[in-house]
Length: 129
Image 1 (cartoon, rainbow, N blue to C red):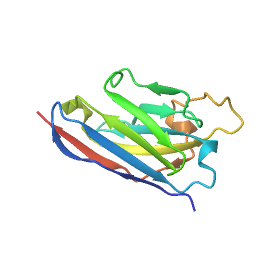
Image 2: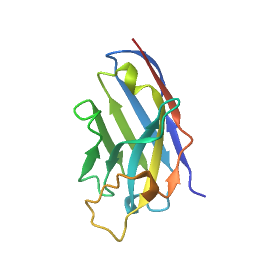
Image 3: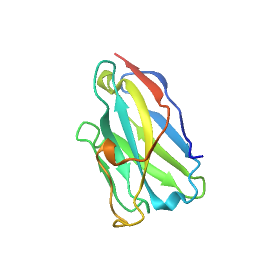
């Protein structure tokens, strides 16, 4: 059974940094592109960042470019989201997701939540002003 388990969320002040982790129980982690999405209260879930199955390519939402970094560790079957210069607008539940991209380019980074096959339960990030 596939499980994605996020951790690392919390309450921080504006300008602080936070690192989210996602542990993935995927049979072959390297067959999956990984992504982070977030959903603020009363809003739709939105794309934050994604990383190709090899880790050689990544994509970011304009709102987080230059502040957030996505990475993955094949040995640990984990994906991370390093967040810096956090703003109150970054407050949301952050979700990790996995998309089976074995038959696509190794550089493919899915952007749409509809492409993803598996989702975690989410971790809350709250940024106070």
